[in-house]
Every structure is written in structure tokens, then in C-alpha cells.
Length: 280
Image 1 (tube, one colour):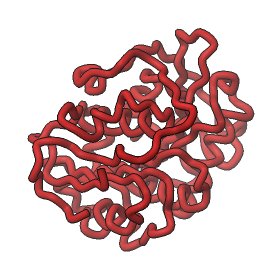
Image 2 (cartoon, rainbow, N blue to C red):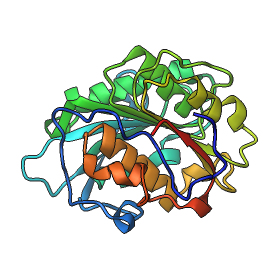
Image 3 (cartoon, rainbow, N blue to C red):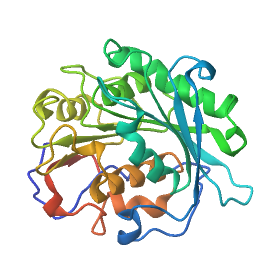
């Protein structure tokens, strides 16, 4: 779909594809204010893991819903960008957990030399750690997994999806992996670009990735107005709403979130976007 310069007053993303045969509705029905809120309906526990107990990646933190009643939750791993540690994506991992996910943020093995191709298997290793070894494994549903990342971590999400097509969703936050095509990726993917990003310029990164994804794959590109490369490292209603709604729709198969990623009741406002595109 041709990139639109906000021809419509909504953030439209892919939602017309067939929903999961086993949709999960964790949490109350969403509203515009709830998807933009700092936290969802779940209280969240925090558990830190040292580097020596996390195979395949560095020290990590797991966030999980704590006020549960026998529920199982999708699992999402979050990778930071170049020179960053897990704190860069901590806010969005914590927020995502409060909407009904088990999330893990981690330090990569070598933040200077681990480029996207090296970060991708670490995203998967982190998911496997949550579902197989962590204290939160009994809350985690290994059949519902997704990956999110910033900068090089964002580029790594699509590398991970290419190698692991069973993933349910990816989200790239100002993703970096210049000029790489993802024409074979089948995992629903949201690319969040930044209008004023001079490190991961959208024309060769976020928007480029979106355009390379096949039309048969649910996909969306959102360009946050006035954002720079590091803006997604700090809490914002629009990035939180877009990320959580995408994960709820495609990891959980929760169609209650479809209107918030495609339609007139979006959680991301026209004034907050400089561009968008989708195959909605």
C-alpha cells in the first residue's frame, strides 16, 4: 500500500486477516483511554536474573501479571539497541506486562558488536528462558510468543521472525538494519518509525522494512511526528498504545483490539503521526 501522509484521521493497521482460532481475552474490554494509559489492569511482579543463569543472552528482568486466576499469558521478549542495556526498553516491557503478558528485557551479550543478526537468536533464547526455566514459566504460554526491539534490537525482530515463523507478532521501535528486505517474513509486523530519526532513517529502515514485507503478511508502518531515534526509549501514550494493541490483536488473537489498530477509534491520534501505511 502506498505510504499516506495522513490522508485519513486514524492510525490504520492490519486487522482484516483471520483471527486466531483460540483467541484469548485477558483483561477488560479496551477503550481509547485504557490503551493509552501508563498501565493496564494487571498488577505486575518484577524478577531479576543474573547473567550466569540466562543462557544465550545477558542479565535480564522478567515482568509478569501478579493478580491472576489460573490464566496463561503470551510471552514477549524485548531487545535494546546498540550500546544500550535493557533499561532502554524497560518501560514498554513493564507496560505490556500490565496488559496481560509475561515480558522479558535483557542485556545483549555484546552491545557494541552484536548487530541485528546476533541479537535475533538472543530474542528467541529469552523467550525460551521464560517458558522453560524462569520462575514465571507456569504463567507463560509458549504457543503465543512475540518479539520487540529498539534500533538494532528492532532490526533483529524481523530477523527473528524470518527464522521463527511460528512467532505471532513483531514490533520494531525505530528499527535499524539498513536496506534489508524481509519479503519472506510471514509474522504480523508493526514498524514504528521516527520522523526526525537521523540514525535509523525511515527511508532505509522502518519504512523500507514495511515496504519489503509481503502483502499477505499483516503489517503496518507508523511514523511518530517529531520523534528522534531515542524517543521510543521513553514512555509515550502513542508508542504504548500502538505496541500493546498490536500484541493483543496478534499474540492473543483478541479481536476486541481490532478497532484500536484499524478504524475510527484508534489509540494513536492523527496529530501524533507524520505518516502511516498499512494493508488494513
